[in-house]
Amino acid sequence: MDTEEKITDLLQKLTEIDTKLDSALARLDDHESRIRSLENIPARRWDMLLSELIGIVAASAIGLLIGKII
Image (cartoon, rainbow, N blue to C red):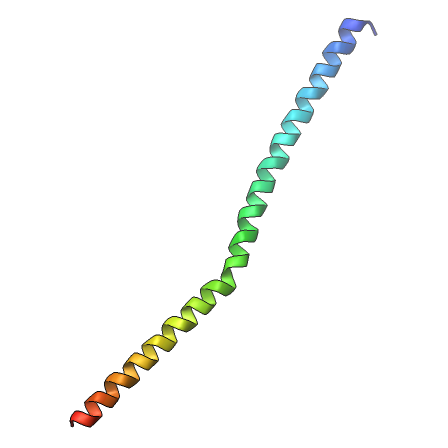
């Protein structure tokens, strides 16, 4: 194998490595977004719980007011 063939082979392998690296980086971005989504689930649950509690307190207060009026 002469020098020119070695350089051509090396360039081809570098191109393959670059393609594989791009693919790995794209998958890494996908994994990162899915992990962030999973991390946000408990926060959303707490938000839902807080909303429900506020609704219950508001309904109780309105019920109390109506009960006193009647």
